[in-house]
Image 1 (tube, rainbow, N blue to C red):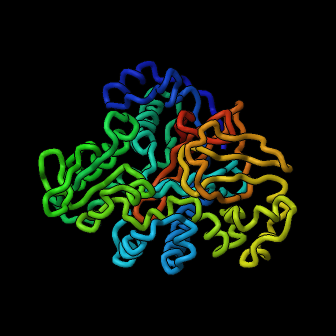
Image 2: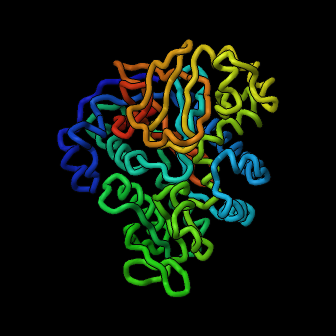
Length: 406
């Protein structure tokens, strides 16, 4: 794994505007950055990222079965009482999943470590699936990359195939996101593009324009009934919304059971189930280990032995994350008893937290990359990379293209 300086395409910003990538620069800062790219070997991609990601997703599915069978875990993951059956039933009847994104710490040598799973409303899809592929083709054509250079990127093709597998031809799907958010719309349109290519109807409607019929069914802004809805609106918000009472009459993408995987409470559950797995970091619910970490007493009996085995690693450095948090909000990194970095965004500070061992990100030219490993259906289909000078990846972290050396 290397970071290689490359010439920018002279017209890439004009091309971005032409194809609707209007958020390539945000708030006066570059979001898409092609002044350099990350280079991998095929072995690194296949053995260290692709196969482990597919395995991690299978493990996550096992965790869903465990969580829905446990009222205690449903409580710890803050699933509202009124909608626990909704979540559990969506799993039991096999409501289909479309996509998700693992965030991995990987240095090119040691096993990739799971930082979290963005399993419900992951963004950066358009950049990963489409724009960085166009970058590769353009750089090959310009001779900036040698002939035979490839990219780990079958994301769009996998999405098309997934929609074709799940839905009958000519099925009508609806897509929604918060209005006037170019990044969210870009993600939704990337999904809709794949659905249309699969032969499905794909109708977009702003989230705030979705209404209810007299008999309680969702309607779009043209009063058409919504039978299937892809929503870029997180389950933790939807389950606390007044509209949650009407969910049963509509198939949601992602399904309600994904609320369990997009929750950082998943991480201690995975560690409990698969302790020592090379792609996992020790993780615990903070309430169970706070006294032990502070030297005030033992860990909770249910995890005391596991905590003892991880105590030295956690004491050296760990991260505290709210179970519900996005873009690094309310995350703190602790090393040798001191906070060495914390997010300036405290939007999720009121939620219970988990404690996870700290996996330092590698540093390239002062930037720290996180691998976004995309799952489509149940398998890994490609990656995108975001980097930041901060140890905590945030909403304005830069997106970097990648390639596989020939």
